[in-house]
Length: 145
Image (spheres, rainbow, N blue to C red):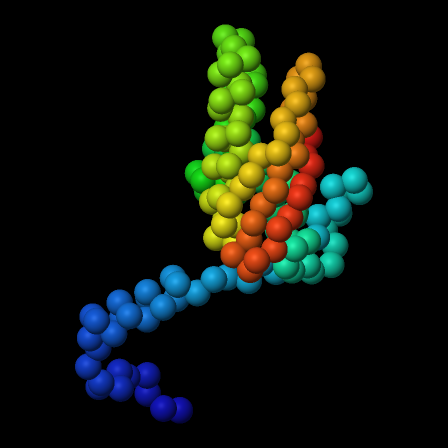
């Protein structure tokens, strides 16, 4: 068995930094598993548009900073705003679109978010939005929060 020793080649910090920057610039695949919310099951692998649609639904349906599995940028702050007793309609009308955009633009695959329609009925918010991806896809999605 060969000994485990360094290969005696010098290591340069510039080389390490260049490799690290190249890795950071690489856009990760959107491959994930399909989550069947109705049945509570994890299903087949998905990629592309179905994966982005699922991300939209999950990010908008997840409260930010409430689950240890997600970092501080995942999800949205909308639930905190809707649950507050001192919010005015004017505040909600200005903040809801911003919060929705911030929840989605975090993903590297999403280039822009356009809010088409927001309807509030009692404790629910119905959102119709369009998402443009870096791959040139335009996705229209309706979500109930």
